[in-house]
Length: 314
Ligand code: AMP
Ligand code: FES
Ligand code: ZN
Image 1 (cartoon, rainbow, N blue to C red):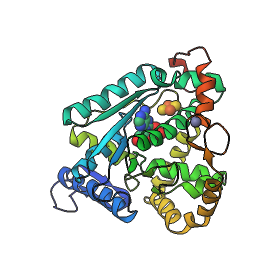
Image 2 (image 1 turned 120 degrees about the horizontal axis):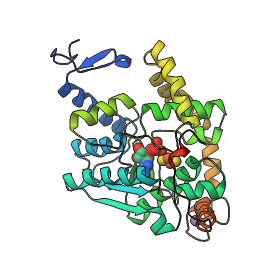
Image 3 (image 1 turned 180 degrees about the horizontal axis):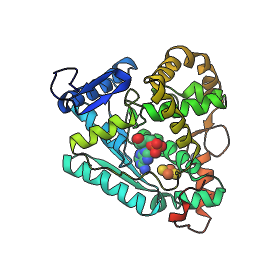
């Protein structure tokens, strides 16, 4: 196998592009995919203040690195979700990355700052942990972006993540979610702009990028997410991709180009009904936002420690 760009021996092949690359050209290819996503979807304008949500995993650390490589400075935000050793180690990876490069990382511990953590929230709501986790993350990414006067929040959602979410949303015809599923979500009252610069890159490419760049990341999947619906959808899509390389990317880009607009009005209607949460001011359809409600409920619950037995649950 030879590199498509320079004909040197290749170290990785990407079937979806029908191409293989040597290490240097792969890094170049990865940067190009991010640059193209940023340009095509007008994610970040020159001089804007960027906040990267950093989990300590491969995608978000690679994203932080890639933005720097593209000359887009960004601060990081790490949320300590309180999922036992998994969270402790994730935080260490995020911190080590920031320290080594002299980057500014904002660290927020859910229990210290808001009086609850994800395992306790899951127990208090008797729901799958990912629900409380996702809700907390979305709320806090937005809150810290607004409070810190950042123009945009970037997350490390990659092509595989987005294709799986799209499949889930289509299977259940979640029209509101479909209206909001796009690589860029513009700012609106109470909401900072959200962007996903890795949407043109797959999971395997992100792992390879980290290895080649010497980025040490949290390899473990979240122990509370193991067995959830999202991971099942990823497996299904991987089977499809195996048979027809490029299927995932075509599914996703077809939706962006031809499907998304049809649902955008659903999201607009939802936004029109929003008012400010009486406690924190975040946009909500109720008197009190879902985050404040969760915080009250989980905060009143006896703390629950994440246990290894939680693997395969939810
Ligand atoms: P996930 O929801 O775990 O698939 O993560 C999607 C994206 O959310 C990651 O790529 C990060 O950008 C961000 N993220 C996830 N977990 C955290 C965390 N604990 N702190 C900050 N950002 C996170
Ligand atoms: Fe949210 Fe695991 S990272 S439940
Ligand atoms: Zn609130």
